[in-house]
Each structure stands twice: as structure tokens, then as C-alpha cells.
Length: 303
Ligand code: PEP
Ligand code: MG
View 1 (cartoon, helix red, strand yellow):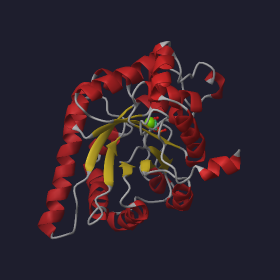
View 2 (spheres, rainbow, N blue to C red):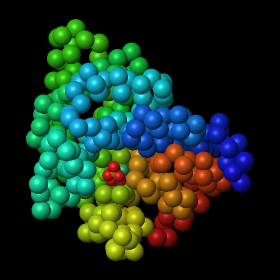
View 3 (cartoon, rainbow, N blue to C red):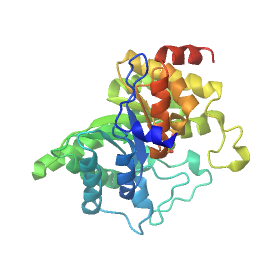
């Protein structure tokens, strides 16, 4: 079987009724690049930028961040690379900027943290926009969005970073922008969010945790933590439908996208692309190529 999976490497992810569904990879470290490239993914659907921040003892400044982002963008150009802005807080704490909270997963995390620290956010946005100069394959993704105002504020800071680089005569290039849908409130705002950005990306790991009130990291509640719970599936369907009314594409980048049965369900619900761990890619491609979207739609309707 593994030889057959290998042979799939150069083939596109296309269903038997000719629906193309780009498969992307999730990574977080530059060291994972060769593995990501070898996986046959058509781009990076989620680069978790927090890892380089977490493994250091002090905040990496713009000049330290820039070469890292540049290497990743160069390695994949012209294929798209989705860089998610700093998603710390929750279980990901920076040793040099500790936040003491009683309930960290409902605390100052993701976009809340970066909007609270605009100097950190601007520094990262500048490094990212600079890395995109001359390549133009960068897509930015904002994590843990729970209201429209956060997107407007983040877009304002992004515009400021771009404007300041231009004024300084530093090479820069604008990027496409997307938001993560991983907080229940964002499900109900999907259409309004889709109107403001270029794409949505559903983070089913956190969406499952917050919709079902089940800790994603607690082995004691591994059974109720169920991404195939009807409420999670309905939420995903609602997000895709809302975004499509605005002609905004939707990617799914949670673990669900890398599970064969779930990937078929997502195909049946019209997800536009899937992003997963590189080790899952060949298997998911095989499943997509073995099925028709029509059949996947029928199966997803029965749920
Ligand atoms: C998610 O929440 O589904 C996601 C992709 O982001 P992370 O796992 O990094 O929280
Ligand atoms: Mg998340």
C-alpha cells in the first residue's frame, strides 16, 4: 500500500467526478520544510508561527523573524503559504511574557493577545510583509477571532505595517488575508467575516473544544471530545454555506481534515481545500481520488 501511496505524490487531489480539492500541509518549524515539500502538498495551509516564539528565551525581533518567514515562502513559491499570526495564550505560554490566568483557554489568547500588544503584532506583520516582497505567495491568517471588530482592528494594523514599510522604502508586498473560525461566535458571524476577508479557515480542534465545552488536551474527556458530533458538523456546514454566499473560499485546517472519513464529509459539504499534518496527506489524496463528490454529498446529507 505504501508504494501505491508514494506513486500518488505527483497526482492532483481530484475526485472521480472531476472536483479539485487542493490539499495543503500544517507545519510550525522551518525544520519540517523538507518533509512538507516531500508530502506532495500544494502549499502550506497553516504555518503555526508561535513555535519559533515558544522555543526562545526572548521575543524574536523583526530581523530575526524575517529570514525564517522568507525561507518558508521561498521554499514553496509560487504555491501559497498561509502564515497564522502569533497564537499564544491558552496552553502556549511565552516564558518571557507570562500571563497568569485562572482559565487560560478562555483568556487572553490568539488575536486578543496580539491586539493587546500591538508592538509585537506590528513587528510580526512587518517581518511577514517584507518576506512576501517579490514572491507574493503569502496568505495571512488571524487566530481566535470572536467578533468582527477584531478583524477590522487587525486589518488596520496590517495596513499600517504596509504603509510604514513603504514610507521607509523597504521592499514589501500585500498579502491575502483570512480568519480562523474556531470560536462558536465566529460560526454565527461567518458571512459577515467572509465579506471582510479573502478566505476562511475552520479550526476544528478549538471549534470542537469550545462548542462542546470539552478540553482538547484532557485525556479523561477524549471520548466526549468528538469532531464528528452533529453540532460540530452543523457548525462547519453553516460556515461553508455562509462564506459561499459571499463567494469566499473555506479551508479546513483542524485535525478533522486529516481523517479519511471526516475528509469525505468535508468534501460532501463543499469545503474548498483541506490542510493537514504532512503524514496524512497521501492517504487523504487516495481517498479523494477514489470517491465522487456526489457520493460524499449523499453521505454527508444523511448525517
Ligand atoms: C484548530 O484549532 O483547529 C487549529 C488548527 O489550530 P491549533 O490546533 O493550532 O489551535
Ligand atoms: Mg486553534
